[in-house]
Amino acid sequence: MLISRAQPSPETNTDIPSSPPSTETLPENMPLFLPSSLPSHIRALPEMKEICELEHRLREPQADDALAEVRRQRRVIQGLWLFKRLNISGTGNRPNTKMITLYKRFNKKTERAAAKYRFAWRALSVLDPGGSWST
Image 1: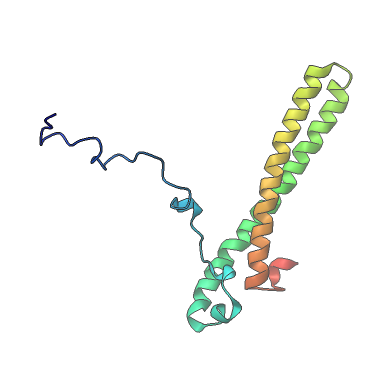
Image 2: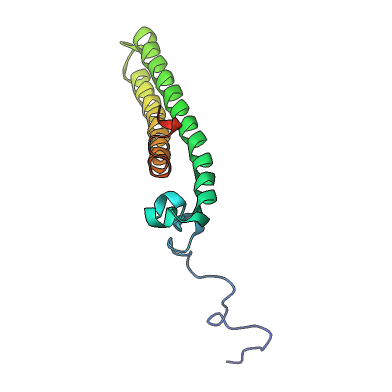
């Protein structure tokens, strides 16, 4: 079989990957070495002071926003349960199932916001233990 030089064979075509990239090479799966994740003797270096301050300035609003989101989601869930108790209880399986599904959706959002808060809290407790953010 003759193969034209203008047309590469399928075995040698490397422009199109045959499989998706592995999860290890994706940028969102690469670890970020922020100052809070580094050992304390490295964070204590004079060169790291400004970078530590930058991360502190990032984490404090992140914790505040996440905590506000947790509080908001808890108020929404409380309103859902009140609505269910006043308007839906005793009306059958379908409305109750829809309310439970809605509750689970809001509960997952609350769990994500709580995880974001815990992550920011851990970073702040490493960067500035007992700082003004903790009160």
